[in-house]
Image (cartoon, rainbow, N blue to C red):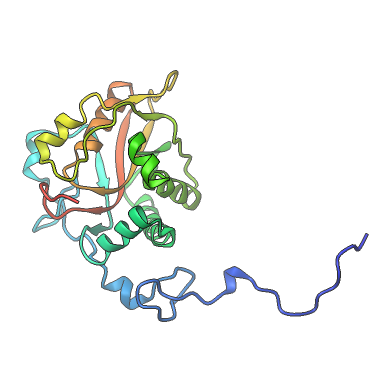
Length: 246
């Protein structure tokens, strides 16, 4: 039964639409809304700690903090340092709900992860977004880590679980605290969902920025104590110094 009128005009097809760069508004070179010139000038993370991704002067090194106190997570994957324009894009995504910026960054992170999977990085069984405090979630209206995990999962075909990790305490904002204060602030802040099982699983925590690593450490320790085989951390950016705040 032909109940729809016939239409012989041009049809708008999103996948064939010419993309514009979200940074300079020039024509993008491919399907990703970012031109080659802007992509080249992003603050790509160079040589860094093999564990926590802290920028270091040479490749293949482990920072002093990770040597002294090895974290519960195995490896941090972050494409960029937290500097312009990545810091601005993340801020606008998180605090102004500019989701296209977050989607763009997630796409580039997915490309970086896929490249690593094809080389030396094992694929995780499950991705877990860092849970947001209830008060912060109510104010913001969304969890940026959960959105990143959804985009990454769709692009990389890796399952995600937004309910496995719980934030059971609304802690003070981390931005104004140093590394020691952040660790104390997060003590007993997280828990596993009832009946959750992670035994023997390789898990990946997803977040936007790694600063001191206190949040990643608290969650990774919780998961490892629950029987996880390995925990990695996937984030958009790494602050240049452990004490930098965002």
